[in-house]
Amino acid sequence: LGSSRALPLFTPPDDNVAMMKRGGKPASSSEPFDDDDFEKGQNEESPLLETSNTSKPKLSVSGLRDGFGLGCYMQRLESSFGHELLIMLFVAQHLMKGFVNEFTAPCIAYLYRSYTVPGPQMQIYRGVTHLPWAMKPMIGLLSDTVPIFGYNKSPYILLVAILGTSAMTTIGLVPKTSLSVTSLVGCLFLIQLQLSTTDLLTEAKYAEKMQTKPKEGPALMSYVWFGLQMGGLCATILIGPILSAFGPKLPFLVTLVPASIVIVPVLRGYMQEKRLTWQEVQTARSAILRQKEACILCVLMLAATMVLSYFGTMLSVRANAMASIAIAVMILLSFSILLRPEIAKVNTFFVLQTSVNFSIGGAAFYFYTDTKEQYPEGPHFSMVFYTTVLGVAGSICSLLGIYTYQKYASEWTFRQLLLVSNVAICILSISDVVFFLRLNVRIGIPDHAFILGSNVFASILSQWQWMPGVVILSQLCPPGLEATMYALLAGCHNLGGTISSATGAWVLQVLEVQPSGAKDESAQFENLWVCAALSSILPAFVLLLLPWFIPDSKQTDKLLQEGDVSVTEGSIWHRLTERNA
Image 1: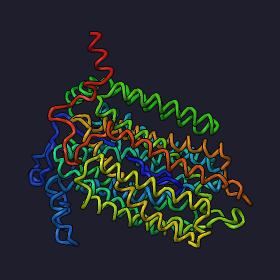
Image 2: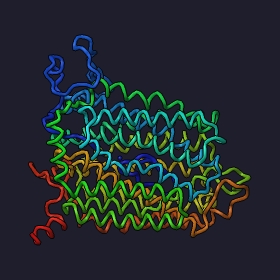
Image 3: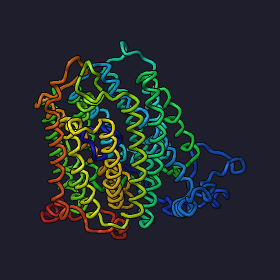
Image 4: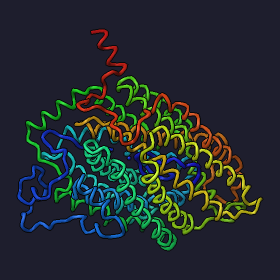
């Protein structure tokens, strides 16, 4: 909806939603977890909360083997990756990123509406609250180099769980008169920090496993994203009636349980972490800090997100857009100079693709949901239709998109799949122009039917565009630096989403599209179609870079050679320093 066809590569929801990784440490096994060894106490990876072997229940996904034709598929995944990883991904990805994220995301726009936040400013606030997804590089570097009690991942997941659930409680219980819009933005920021950190530390684990089983990579990605869509489907079925009956605050209290349940598998050791000795910590830290360029990029990403967080809440829309563009140029140049060419090119392509797809979701939200008194000519979608009906249709079709991707496109090359999916999405985005001009009404197509049809195709195509991006970034993470590199690449992409929100807000302001839910604001939507046209056309020009920036390899091919652990070899900076030496 609202020319936000392209899903953020690692991110949670903005107009849709926004994603990366941790893993690989000294002396840890890269092979699937052996259940028998654990029962004998021989496994090297111990849980934070120690339990006796005799009392520990043996959880397994094996019970699914005979159901609904998923048996061979799940058995294959369990054999390749181990049941503990699958269960941890179920909790972190399916429950948190799927259910919690999708259950609260529709409420955010209605919360801003209650504060009468104009459409362009709403986009900027959304960009700020989703910056934790761009902070992933520094989170990954921190967890890699500063383990807590000898553990790299689990304590950080526990810490952000406390912060996230506290923020949910605040939004749910504190009345609007006592909670300023700036404080609301801060709470939403902490919620996204929990989601992004948990996503980073768990997805990195399967990035690590995919390095050892590249041919099973598409199958594991399908498991993650199919379950994520199922969690989102359950959330969207429930959110419309609850939002309509109780308002946008109660859902944040409902999500307290699934948001905090991640503590259980973490304490039971399902992150498969070994408690590192001080010597191992020093060894790992030295190895990471030797990659000076990667560490510099992590610090730059942190600085960029902090600056954008401040600018987004303190500066004007125009000044924020200018600062965002300047930061985007600086980040892209830094990545291109410091990283090896094959990684830098892929990163540049995805950041450009995201940044030029101007987000206009803030204004589009008012276009869709304004009442007859506010926008007489509008579609006047109800809360239930806008959140549940469209959400359910989108989730079901996203599942269909994942299924068709796995069945028909998982053997395609990256270039083929990105070209076909992006061209199709650009063409489909023209439907936004038609809708904002109200041309569908003139030719007799009802608003509800038109937007449902558009949403169906957009959801399918978005999965085809999304999945190869996740796979290619997983393949570009050198062993031992999965967390830091995955986080750098995904965080950079997500930063592009924030830049898209900021520049889109400026375009809306320049074209005088600034609805806020006021009475008789029809004039505010006169140029919305122009914004939608720009958002549809500009991403197509980035496709011209495909032959130079994206490898012509199949998704099951290894992009890095065995023993290739450097992220900077062959980079512009590396060549310059070698020449001077």
